[in-house]
Length: 422
Image 1 (cartoon, rainbow, N blue to C red):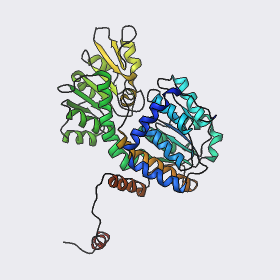
Image 2: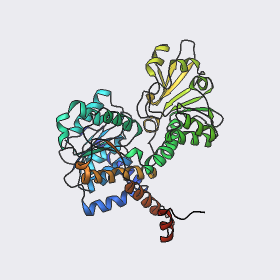
Image 3: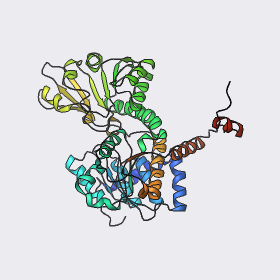
Image 4: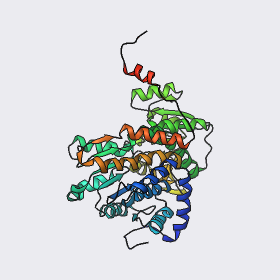
């Protein structure tokens, strides 16, 4: 361990964190292959990276990969409740990576940690929710001259960054890793689907079979949650504002209702929209006694907690580690999980390592792409280059022992022609 600055909960947790990082690595063979190449080629030599990500075992393996490529990495948390303190300690002690993250940190500490991470004066930013990028633009504009580009991991962050680009204030190019097919088709659907249910069950120990579960939003995250809840025997209702997604949910066999109607029926509500006040005062007024409210979106704004507090008698009562009971004036009790933050990371461990393998492979390769091409890109939000997406898919298939067909020359000629018909 060097004299680099850091702020973690307890360095004595480092060995436990290292054991868990190594366990996760077993499930991340694509990232491991990229790290082996990075060690040989050192494509990131001399590059400083500031990363605002969930500090988990999977993120630790991404940081190790970037470091193997020659980068100097600094890391802070992208959510106050998602940090795994033993992992943070291990990164500091065993890998000499400055980490600024403590599980449960207050808002002031959260932003102080972002500032400490930005003090690394990065050439590349990595974000999950765009808090680091927005802070940099608002408070440290002079530091942006040397930045080659950035990456963004989540839907919520991509929405914010595209708004910045539309307004002409985005100061450097960003690659939307979230939009990679090998990210959102798998991480969002299978990762969020499984880890959200995992977080809810760890927090509550409830039986899902026979319960009415209301899933707000039928994007890739909502699809995964609805699929997993139904698989465990729940009766699933989907709410949507997009007619195409609502139609898809209906044809996938789910009931589709407005939230005003679903609020009367639900036993468990899970928000996954990326928008504010999905569950609001009129919905709280209609809910059953004992309804459970959970959020799988990035920010804690989908459940309108200030409105719920105004409707409640006294302060909420903590009945389990991640469960707060709100008693309404008519005696009904509503239960909020993980303070309305991402339930999969606050109450559990987040996505399984095997699915994060693809997401973070995209991150690592996107950083390499920005180092090579960042100066030639416009100040816009870019999709992951298709060749990176396909490379990640090929590597994942290889590591799974799955072989696929290849087009014959004749088939390639046919697909490239227009003359042949019926």
